[in-house]
Image (cartoon, rainbow, N blue to C red):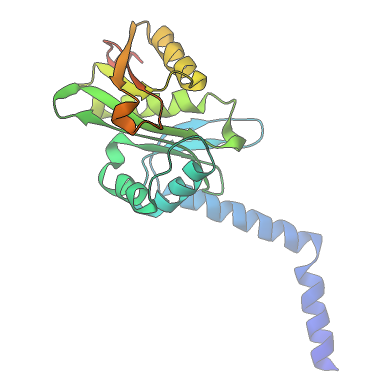
Length: 212
């Protein structure tokens, strides 16, 4: 009987509005403390919830893989490749996370060995819940503003002729940064196995990252 009363009392306490509020507050505090362990490049304040842009870590690799998988028609690479990017190329990559730590945005790239002042953007993905926020642009600019990119003067990527979203993004970047945009065919369809559209090399610049 005493045990039943005790259990009932514990259930009442655990399910009271005060207890639920306390648990919610503790969960939010834990999330904020977890986010505090990271240095953020930028914070995007939205009416619904903020987004946090930062360098990825090894632990983010699989989350990046899941994000890209949910963003067709992006080419999905192996989970290993994203873990590797998040580990060995973190200075030239960025992710965006929500308050719960879910990866909702990702950009990867590198400075070219044969052209050290050129940053080649390899892949960019924005999850459905983060679209319409300008996140793609913010991810790119976050990387470009890092001290490691102070020497960069041009941004390049490849875009297929039918990828209207990517063309629009790079056109907006060129206009925003007030620099010219040039494009030419880079990889032909035959070079890509004949089942893939040709890829155009798109180049914008010159610019100073400090002016972005």
